[in-house]
Amino acid sequence: MSLRGKAAIVAAAEVDTFQSQGRSPVGLMGEATRRALAEVGLHKDDVDGLFTASSYYAMPALTVAEYLGLRPTYIDSTVVGGGSFISHVGHAAAAIEAGLCSVALITYGSTQRSDRGKLTSLAEWSPYEQPYGLIHPISSFGLIAQRHMHEFGTTSEQLAEVAVSARQWALKNPDAPYPTPLSVQDVLSSPMLSTPLHKLDCCLVTDGGAAIVVTSAERARDLTPKPIYVLGVGEAINHRNIVGMPDLTTTAAVDSGKRAFDMAGRGPADMDSAHIYDAFTISLMILLEDLGFVSKGEGGPFVESGAIAPGGSLPVNTNGGGLSYTHPGMLGMFLMTEAVRQLRGDAGDRQVPGARTSVVHGMGLALAAHATAVLSTDVEP
Amino acid sequence: MTDRPTPTPRGEENIYFEEARAHRLAFQQCESCGARVFYPRTVCPVCLSDRLSLRQAAGTGTVHSFTTLHRAGHPGLADRVPYTVVLVDLDEGVRVLADLVVSPEADVPWIGMPVQAVFDEVTPELTLPRFQATAGAR
Image (cartoon, rainbow over all chains, first blue to last red; front, side):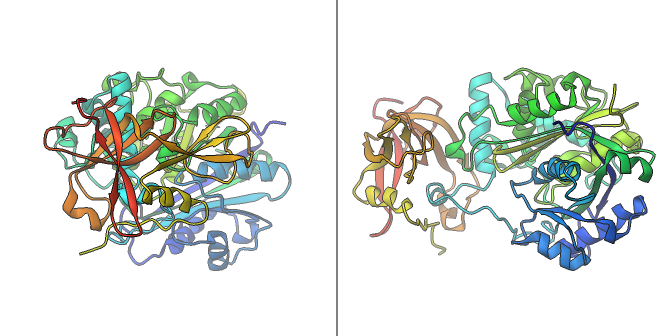
């Protein structure tokens, strides 16, 4: 049995994606949920599936259910880092298809920016890594980037191009926080944190909340003229700590991506936009390779050509991504909301003309957890 | 002065640090499938056998990757920056992480650099393996 086209996203909303004023993490989830349900005229009591992950709440489904007065019949708090919500989309589609729930709410909220200096993280330390003082998770990505450079000749300038492309997209997004262009030289002259990664090779630290609503394809067509169908989903995980990563330059996204594309019956070449976890310049570059947009080791020349920037062959992270739009600890929800915007044709100045099919890829920890979803305006070509 | 980050090992995790106190770099070998395993576990991650025996690595290997921190990952290490953390492929075929002891004449790490483990007695309770460039490898 395939989940292809069985479920659809009917609503997607964001709130306070840079600096929140007076909202707690669950408060952000509440406001995002209110906005999402209002898009399609659903009442909160219609929600019977609850999917959430958090660095703030040890039992986030309980926190959210109490705060919003929900009584879900199906609950999932899978936490595999920032890509958790892409996993949740697949889990929600499966639960809906199995009849375990009918209207699934997926939500996230974080006040990471307001909490600066006391960032919350669920990441427990490995006793074998903690004593050596790695900057979590930057140093793990430093080790990964150094190895990618060694194996494939990738340069710091090429990594910087990822951040430059993200900023070019962000300049088209009125909600993005930094309305000034970024150059390769700006990235290279920003403080070195953990070689070869500079400060501007790393994502923003922001607040933010978001919610999406998933239901059966059949019910979706009654709720909205623009349901966004879930054509394919895939998950894969293969390590926890950097010392356990089997290959520093190839990730389990190879598997999650293949599963999602195979289920969808579509391939990388069919994607009108791609929304791929860019917590770091190197994470996006490796994921472009592992998802099959370029062959292994070709990520550097690919981004250097301008391919992922506005006007390039592959629109990537059209809202500015984690590098230039928002990254409130976990980015996955904001990849999903932007993909939905593109497919609905609601992306304003950054709209990809005629976008019909997009891929969303979430990642957790240092390229440890992977979830891929292929979304489309149509079930059939 | 903030203390440096200190591990709080539980259960079988203690084996590694007990061995380090004796200046031994520990890994395991599975008696059932032959897999070499780092870090100490109660079952083999290849075949789930519980027949794992403790082995002592020679402590020699090569740098698989490295990162030099210009901002400390912990306040207790702020006076050490810049410092380098290395992933090392030991000759026995397991990969470990530690920091690099940098000497004045060999301050630039490189991938493939031969290294050897040394043992740093941080406190009476805690000895940490570190790596230094093998003599003549520079």
